Image (tube, rainbow, N blue to C red):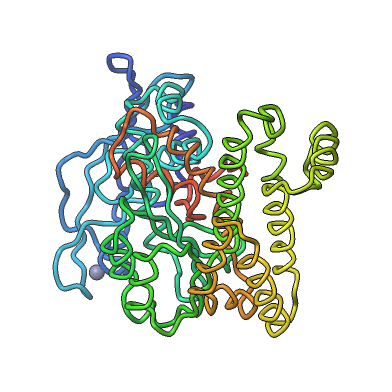
Length: 415
Ligand SMILES: [Zn+2]
């Protein structure tokens, strides 16, 4: 009975034994039973009690052996628990709740689902696609139940668009943890979306948040002030720079239009030259920039220099000096006679306390942006399942740093 001992050792059975292994309609059926008169643990309180009666047979899909599907069958026992005072079902070591998938199979499917598209995982294990989804659901529920948010102090809030910008998701990350982890995701980017996050973590937890990093998106700002008023709001420097790059790009577009008749070639193909950091330019782009720098009165060039000057802001160590520098830059920009940059400068002025808050907390959503890009790739793993539920599930599973249930006893876990 080779398969029997394989099942026994990999499930780590102590109080149960393999009764029989048969091949039925292409399915390896493993019947399990409780051993004799052993006391079994109560699922309510964990104490060991005598068996009172047995429940109807349950079936669990288990790991295939040489690609032959395996099913575990067992009649769970009810124990007469003295502490709980009522009959309770035993703790079944290979089972998670009422799931029809064995715990080791849940873990295997869930682990591979972090790396591969879910339909590929389904094919690999010869299970239905819905079984993979169910396994991920159980793994995520297990991880969420054990997740500790008590140390949550700094969060990053960012939006993510999917389906080509038709749908938005709000993602909340723990940006002080190592590795950073996604802690919440929900469809939408309205006030009510972020309120759902605060409802989920509860007021006590919200009151412990010290800093929040986000874009200047008014919906988020309002809800953060309303639900975590004690937290310092830090506007994300990458978002700020993105607004500045948009302004520079607008200047280039307007100027290219103005030069269309007399110098149509001058700004052609220069878009990324102005937007990239100079150290990232290719040799060709650098030469082109050199040539453009000799052009007198080019408005795009002045906008570009202002953009480069703005980058120094983040290098300051002291908030006082940063404040001074920002004032200086504000003066340059507002006197530049370049409208998009003046508008940008005034926007900074309106949000100045939250921009300078960076120098108190030094948090940004840089890592979050990278994770959000990952999230887009990850959502494709759940392909074929387009609901918000699957999308959220896939992201929490892959980015939430959630603990997985324990799998097989003797087979090494993948890293
Ligand atoms: Zn009990």
